Amino acid sequence: RGLLLYGPPGTGKTSLVQAIVRECSAHLTMINTYSVHKAHAGEGEKFLREAFSEAYSQASQGRPAIIFIDELDGICPRRNSRREQESRIVGQLLTLMDGNKKLSKKLPHVVVVASTNRVDAIDPALRRPGRFDSEIEVTVPTVEERLQILKLYSKNLHLDENVDLQIIAGWCNGYVGADLEALCREAARLAYRRLSNSSEDGKVLTLLMEDWESARSQIKASMIRGVTKEAPTVSWDDIGGLKDLKKKLQQAVEWPIKHAAAFARLGISPVRGVLLHGPPGCSKTTLAKAAAHAAQASFFSLR
Image (cartoon, rainbow, N blue to C red; front, top):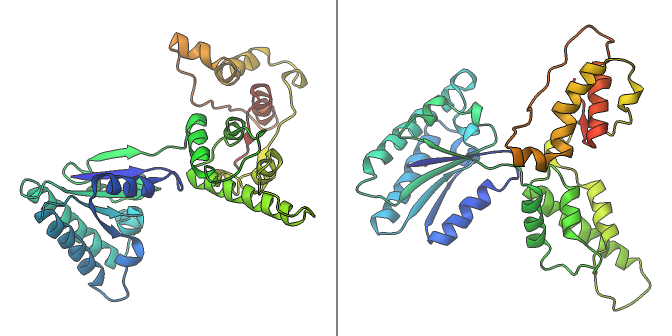
């Protein structure tokens, strides 16, 4: 009776719920951190009870009802990080979830859906069977999914014939849906500014490829904001010796990227992580940069 959507911010968790509500013509009851964490004691628990009661009332009339709890980690954090008021709210929600399970036979059309950006920050009691026992990860979109999102957000924009959304989607590795929406807005804003500065009257607002390039320099993937991104120029030839180690890194990092189709065809799962260890000054960072350069991959240094 409970579904938990988790994934990075901006991937469309709330939009998914809204789309389901429209598709099913269901009644939507929204619960968020602001509505629950009231100033006075007991108000948050009362709000939760009223929200569930509203959903049951709709279901008793034969209409599907969805209770959507946004940012569940902010409402029900883990025990070691919450205050007394939050403990009462968690207890109230657990009681309501257990009650929803008991009422599921009488009112089969009530579903509780929650979303979170930090699934590990939620009280584990909520993830037990009978509560939020079904979990779906909403991941960062692939290049094909980014293309579909760009088409959706640019459908009302006039694009120049040279604009290739497939190429733009390829540029936007790591962008989520919210980032791509912001990218389209920024490209349109830049096109409008360019047209405003033009002396030609009556010209149609048309987005050029250069508008998208400029917008991409302004709109970064939200997942990597505040993280330093480098474009390494170090090659394997710049590192003396270490022949066997360089070969292992090529096989682990470079080959899965450059020969992805062959790996998929042979059913080989690429290595997901490599740990380089050794004393300071033995070229660990330089080797990692060389691997990124050879694979034409982005390099992020986290210290």
